[in-house]
Length: 163
Image (cartoon, rainbow, N blue to C red; front, side):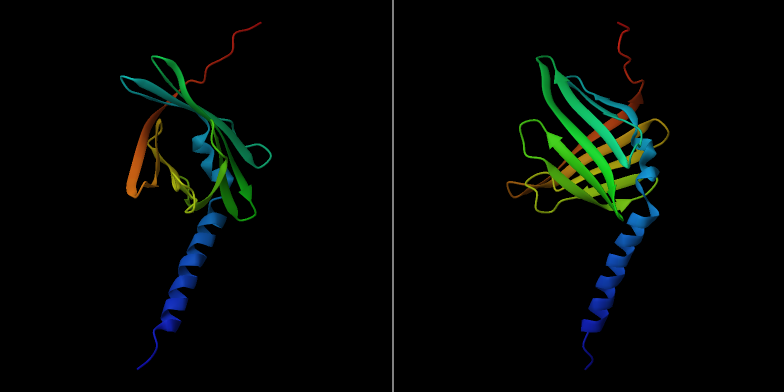
């Protein structure tokens, strides 16, 4: 009887090579569709994300959630290319920073993962047409798999008033 170990090793190497090719095939420049201003509105809250265009190998972003009582939450983010890897650094209000690694990245979607993070373990964005982006965070929270979606639409970025 032949061992299936070589097949398993080859399969693992193939999957790893596919992930590396995905990284090389989708440098940070392919994520230009994430720049600008995005908004998700509901009856009780507004979630906004704004991301600056690529410069010096980085895309700097910020997000905030507001409700009837005011500012509910905010986060600063940085997407950057580190050799063949795309990284998503999250700096959320009142929590430690975390760096997620892109496992899937192309001209229409990106999925960042950090399996050892408390929650979320995945942060993802998928372009939906010319003026919408579906973002989500997912993972396990207190033993239960959870997913929170943010159906963003592109909006004009606010302009600061002249002094």
